[in-house]
Image 1 (cartoon, helix red, strand yellow):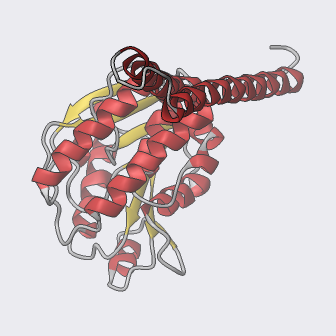
Image 2 (cartoon, one colour):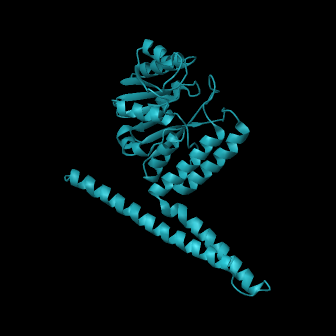
Image 3 (cartoon, one colour):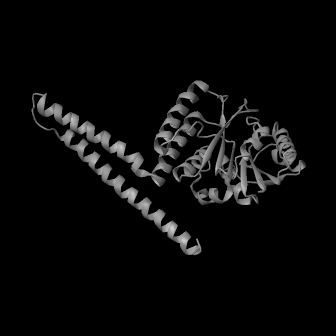
Length: 301
């Protein structure tokens, strides 16, 4: 692979491990003879993270205020000069030596994700069931299995990522958005098993707030790219409840007539189904307009 690689390192108060991460990345990339740059985005750290990174000779961009890991990743992408973007967290959890393993599948694939073999985060008893539910929902919506939705270690084609950069939130759900945006738009995504280590220092992940944000991200991206897939099951659920209740109230209960609640369930189901059709039509028209714009911009294609 002859493309230039930009390694983006979002960091917030990681002075205890930032030097090691930079050294590991530099050693691995130099050994593999990649044309690369390392960009560390300091998200308004209050410790020596930025100072240490500058001493290591990497590109350092600092946020004036703490904006979140997603905002840091977006800043890195906008400043990157490489055709291929590699992202990993500056907390010692991801093995830099696996970067060549990801890059060897580029540019055959559009995104290669480091799929963690184990869960080493805090509050594992809460995180694992929540992750299973989120992964199951996301897999259903994109119609393919997602073994790791929110890994912070991945390689992506910059030109594709830029198309969806405006959708990426500032928080932890940024990487989930990258995964879903590529999958919903039928880009080639590959998952590579990687080791995952216990982080150095204190985790910034907030189990309830960030899990909620992950859920909202899945629903939001689904509505943006494939609302029909998400809304139709909801519509059928209300319709089924309405029909079952109607059957019971008319044929089994003493009232022997349809109740207002039965009618409301059916109406809600019909309304959601109609909305799903309208939303799907809007998405289809938007995509057609985008494709026409591409064709007009590139008449030779």
